[in-house]
Length: 376
Image 1 (cartoon, rainbow, N blue to C red):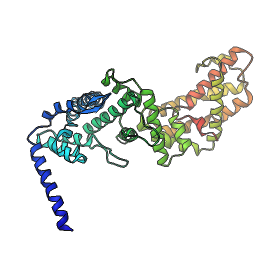
Image 2: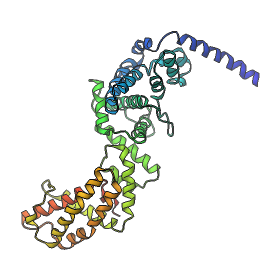
Image 3: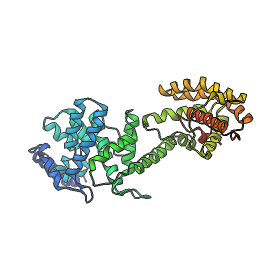
Image 4: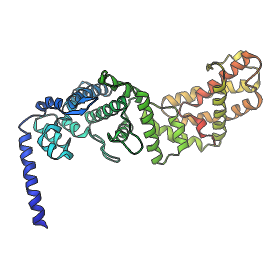
């Protein structure tokens, strides 16, 4: 058996050595032009055009995350990331794409950060795979996955049921993992939007649809991590744009749900949401103190004046747990308001003012999550 295996393996290794030696006679830079002859997709052009798009997207991301050095490293890595696809080695052993790119980049004397980024731009390749090791790798990996997602959604090539030939679900989860685990200060909508101009008129802007897709993927992922559907729904209903914040919001919601005041406030919140939805005109979160006549509405307004600024300050410093716990103090005045105050008063000015008070309450209470989703 050993001899039989050796007879098969030896020529394969000899081929690999021959390809490796041949490939190193040409630099990766000299192969860039060859990508223009490789078709990527009939509606999205060649691999060469694709590389131009990935470079444009990578540059936009790198400018937000780092300095001129990161921009230069990410741009060079994005330019060369696909060049090993036209080498003999990867032609014969496709599973080595990226890996060979790194070896050839080092052979060409390129910076290690660039070489690492060339290999790492495919990561994470599967659930549980490691993330790119350096900043340049993260930038190019994000750009590469965003190019695929924005392009495919832009031509209407969406995953359906169990069919996902372009692995768009995996790409979306890869982007989510990098944003969350690398704690990147990037907002999802702006990130998706920034990739659209790179395509010119080849696609239609499907950012809204793609954003829905991302939040669906994130929802599934969070429930697999052990968060309840209620907790996930409460947080994702607000579409938080910094995905690195989501886990902290979920922990805050879980801690809030354990408080004795939580259910009463969640139920009141649901009631407030329904009242505001039914209002004929758009309600402004403004209160005229002179029009507060019932003691219960005066008390709620006073409580809001004390509690809301503190909760807002805690929210702005990302202390979401403390922010929600501060809001628990509103339970008694909220209960009293609904017991003693008629919101839909006959006097139009009184009614508008009470709706304004409820809108102020609603805005204060729903910054971390949509608490109405916690009502049972």
